[in-house]
Length: 124
Image (cartoon, rainbow, N blue to C red; front, side, top):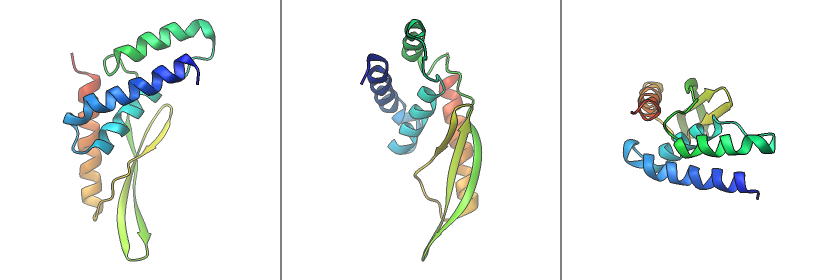
Protein backbone atom coordinates (compact mmCIF):
# COMPACT_ATOMS: atom_id res chain seq x y z
CA UNK A 1 0.00 0.00 0.00
CA UNK A 2 1.42 3.36 -0.93
CA UNK A 3 1.66 6.38 1.38
CA UNK A 4 -1.47 8.08 0.03
CA UNK A 5 -3.67 4.99 0.33
CA UNK A 6 -2.42 4.33 3.85
CA UNK A 7 -3.07 7.91 4.92
CA UNK A 8 -6.52 7.85 3.26
CA UNK A 9 -7.51 4.69 5.14
CA UNK A 10 -6.21 6.09 8.42
CA UNK A 11 -8.12 9.37 7.96
CA UNK A 12 -11.29 7.48 7.07
CA UNK A 13 -11.06 5.54 10.37
CA UNK A 14 -10.37 8.75 12.31
CA UNK A 15 -13.32 10.51 10.68
CA UNK A 16 -15.66 7.61 11.43
CA UNK A 17 -14.65 7.75 15.10
CA UNK A 18 -15.06 11.55 15.22
CA UNK A 19 -18.44 11.43 13.47
CA UNK A 20 -19.90 8.62 15.56
CA UNK A 21 -21.46 10.92 18.20
CA UNK A 22 -23.33 12.83 15.46
CA UNK A 23 -24.91 9.74 13.93
CA UNK A 24 -27.26 7.15 15.40
CA UNK A 25 -25.00 4.16 14.83
CA UNK A 26 -21.39 3.39 13.94
CA UNK A 27 -22.36 2.16 10.46
CA UNK A 28 -23.71 5.64 9.65
CA UNK A 29 -20.49 7.29 10.83
CA UNK A 30 -18.49 4.86 8.66
CA UNK A 31 -20.71 5.59 5.66
CA UNK A 32 -20.35 9.35 6.17
CA UNK A 33 -16.56 9.06 6.50
CA UNK A 34 -16.38 6.98 3.33
CA UNK A 35 -18.43 9.53 1.40
CA UNK A 36 -16.25 12.42 2.61
CA UNK A 37 -12.99 10.70 1.73
CA UNK A 38 -14.16 9.36 -1.62
CA UNK A 39 -15.36 12.84 -2.66
CA UNK A 40 -11.71 13.89 -2.84
CA UNK A 41 -11.08 11.45 -5.67
CA UNK A 42 -7.58 10.03 -6.02
CA UNK A 43 -4.44 11.87 -7.06
CA UNK A 44 -3.23 10.56 -10.40
CA UNK A 45 0.03 12.44 -10.63
CA UNK A 46 2.68 12.27 -7.93
CA UNK A 47 2.92 16.07 -7.77
CA UNK A 48 -0.82 16.21 -6.86
CA UNK A 49 -0.38 14.04 -3.79
CA UNK A 50 0.57 16.86 -1.41
CA UNK A 51 -2.63 18.78 -2.29
CA UNK A 52 -4.67 15.62 -1.81
CA UNK A 53 -3.07 14.90 1.57
CA UNK A 54 -3.65 18.50 2.71
CA UNK A 55 -7.34 18.30 1.72
CA UNK A 56 -7.61 14.94 3.46
CA UNK A 57 -6.33 16.45 6.70
CA UNK A 58 -8.93 19.24 6.62
CA UNK A 59 -11.90 16.87 6.38
CA UNK A 60 -14.76 17.20 7.13
CA UNK A 61 -14.21 20.92 6.63
CA UNK A 62 -13.81 21.96 3.03
CA UNK A 63 -15.25 18.73 1.69
CA UNK A 64 -16.39 18.76 -1.90
CA UNK A 65 -18.92 16.02 -1.14
CA UNK A 66 -22.40 16.77 -2.42
CA UNK A 67 -24.36 13.80 -1.09
CA UNK A 68 -27.87 13.15 -2.38
CA UNK A 69 -30.42 10.43 -2.01
CA UNK A 70 -30.09 7.97 -4.87
CA UNK A 71 -32.94 5.65 -4.02
CA UNK A 72 -34.99 3.94 -1.37
CA UNK A 73 -35.80 0.45 -2.53
CA UNK A 74 -37.56 -2.64 -1.23
CA UNK A 75 -35.76 -5.92 -0.72
CA UNK A 76 -37.63 -9.16 -0.27
CA UNK A 77 -35.46 -11.91 1.11
CA UNK A 78 -38.01 -14.66 1.70
CA UNK A 79 -39.95 -13.55 4.80
CA UNK A 80 -37.68 -10.57 5.52
CA UNK A 81 -39.14 -7.74 3.43
CA UNK A 82 -37.35 -4.49 4.20
CA UNK A 83 -36.25 -1.18 2.68
CA UNK A 84 -32.68 -0.05 1.97
CA UNK A 85 -31.20 3.35 1.18
CA UNK A 86 -28.48 4.35 -1.28
CA UNK A 87 -26.83 7.75 -1.58
CA UNK A 88 -24.86 9.24 -4.44
CA UNK A 89 -22.38 12.00 -5.12
CA UNK A 90 -20.08 12.82 -8.01
CA UNK A 91 -17.87 9.83 -7.24
CA UNK A 92 -20.38 7.01 -7.13
CA UNK A 93 -23.06 5.44 -5.01
CA UNK A 94 -22.90 4.49 -1.36
CA UNK A 95 -25.35 1.97 0.15
CA UNK A 96 -26.35 2.03 3.77
CA UNK A 97 -26.20 -1.34 5.49
CA UNK A 98 -29.25 -0.48 7.57
CA UNK A 99 -32.65 -2.06 6.98
CA UNK A 100 -36.02 -0.44 7.58
CA UNK A 101 -39.42 -2.08 7.90
CA UNK A 102 -41.24 0.65 5.95
CA UNK A 103 -40.50 3.01 3.09
CA UNK A 104 -41.42 5.97 5.30
CA UNK A 105 -38.79 4.98 7.89
CA UNK A 106 -36.17 4.57 5.16
CA UNK A 107 -36.97 8.01 3.76
CA UNK A 108 -36.88 9.58 7.23
CA UNK A 109 -33.48 7.96 7.85
CA UNK A 110 -32.14 9.23 4.50
CA UNK A 111 -33.27 12.79 5.24
CA UNK A 112 -31.76 12.72 8.73
CA UNK A 113 -28.49 11.22 7.49
CA UNK A 114 -28.08 13.89 4.81
CA UNK A 115 -28.87 16.73 7.22
CA UNK A 116 -26.27 15.44 9.69
CA UNK A 117 -23.62 14.91 7.01
CA UNK A 118 -24.18 18.33 5.43
CA UNK A 119 -24.05 19.84 8.90
CA UNK A 120 -20.59 18.35 9.41
CA UNK A 121 -19.40 19.52 5.99
CA UNK A 122 -20.62 23.07 6.64
CA UNK A 123 -19.56 23.28 10.29
CA UNK A 124 -17.37 26.33 10.97
